[in-house]
Image 1 (cartoon, rainbow, N blue to C red):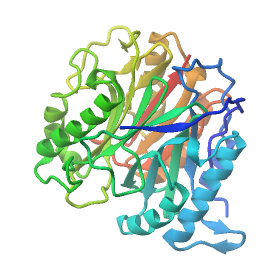
Image 2 (cartoon, rainbow, N blue to C red):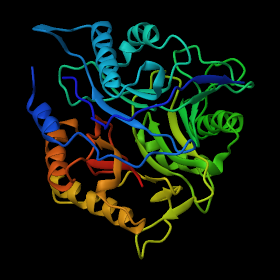
Image 3 (tube, rainbow, N blue to C red):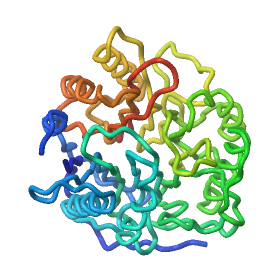
Length: 392
């Protein structure tokens, strides 16, 4: 199935990218969700318009099933191109991609096709192994694109990636940072060690990208942490908190995601946004937690929420209770679900996807975006974690 969120078409001025230093029951549920956000006010040059495309797969060509990773990657990227064209955009407008592979052994084959679509100034990217909602899919793609001018961030002290992605891409005040692993900045070779050694090396590289973009760790607004083993969560946190600001750490989600190189224990993908209006948002009565994250970071233009979860007697109850938490955080910022522009659903058991999407369809308003959905097991015993980003 080739499913992606629908967004309103925006007229765009000329832009450039420059360098600096068979339908399943689940598909029916997804298609039943409202796919188009209501039109937002025109963004300023510093607040780029962002288009989110989710759950893009390619499993068939007419009546023929596609069975190899090369075939499915081609079909998925063609579908991405069609979705982009529907918004007046092209591959050159993509700033961030998340690739989910059913099998890490497909990484090389996927890359062989992927690099033919992004031949120059490729978007930032993170690739993890995940269980996919579409049982026939070997690959699933989510992407972020913008009609605005962008700048590729290539730190002079950080070896250029040997793979088809950029370290960072800046659009206005928003910086998308590729999923970073523990690599030597001079050689791009893995830096081995325990998860704390690797987390520190990851943040060292992220720091170079931020600095090259004229930012620092205090500008991070949202991070996704993919752990090879969720039992490493506590040790990772000890090193992680050394780099994020104590009073207003970025929003975050941390889940298990199979990494593409067995030398790596952690991969961290972040977004930064330069804003004088930056503030932590917490629901009334909620104090700081023990983990180094904020419930949400408000930048004035956007609200970046952490992945949230809540106990319940079953998956529908977990989902509703989690949405209640998210709604309380949105309300604390003067927003509601109608402001939500991007949604991620992390599932311990991907077979719960249809149930979770049914609840989302009941709770979210008309015009809500289609969520990215992937089987990425949670830290702890719960089954559903949901992360959002909202716009004013």
